[in-house]
Length: 208
Image (cartoon, rainbow, N blue to C red; front, top):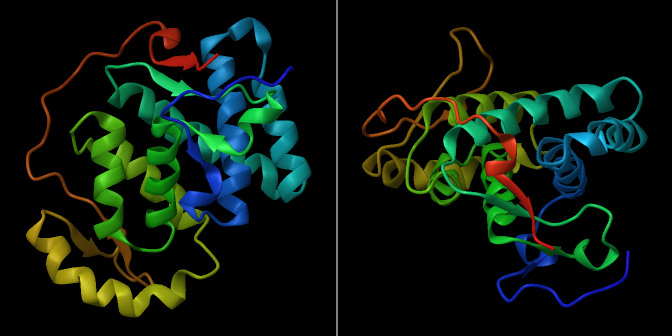
């Protein structure tokens, strides 16, 4: 695909300071989103293929499947289009849209037990709502695939705990008897039930 000028609001991927797992996750995400926006592309096959190549035949499909569940929850949580870059565009590989940035930063924070840092991206990606389903599914994905440096964030997590609770966040175990605590983002007010939005293309759109 020929190169083109990026949109004015595009952000450098490097500025997000993602780890290698999360950078690979973005590539897989873009193919899944293409599959929803353009079903005839069958881009979900590329998503699973890339995941298997990056993380292995056993673990790769598990990661892709978990990520797909997060994307499904995201589609239910949003009322507006989700702008993402074409996964086949070479000039987009080092850039992210604002929506992609919020999605990646949400999972980046959750994979490190940083509920305080996850709240902002959650609000950005949902349009100002602490969507319970998206939070639950994203936290489940983060618990299955935590960051390698997650244990090193214990001090920062403790320092932010009081501030997070003041903002309506809490840190609790996912289940009794677990060896470590995982972050749980609790909405200060449960949003009203919203119907499923029919066409996937309404929520996912290529930037170019």
